[in-house]
Image 1 (spheres, one colour):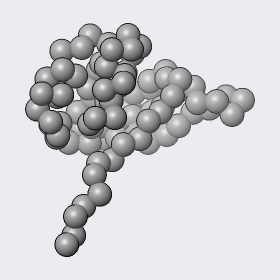
Image 2: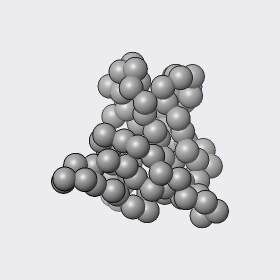
Image 3: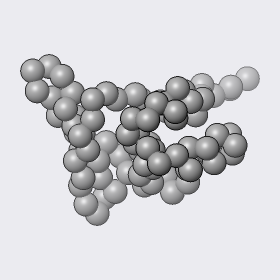
Length: 87
């Protein structure tokens, strides 16, 4: 979740696509993210397609398994989580 700190105050539209029904991670940062007008959280969604034009990302298709939605974006940052400590 710390990776999104740079985007929080950018003023640009930011989508957080979350596969579950709630966010995980630092609660203080979650609250900051939830109150920013430029950030939209899509719960229970996943990316199913990347669309490009002239080798540049133009949009993505996301789904909540009920309907699909196309999001016009200029970049994609993939962050899955932390590396598990298996020791």
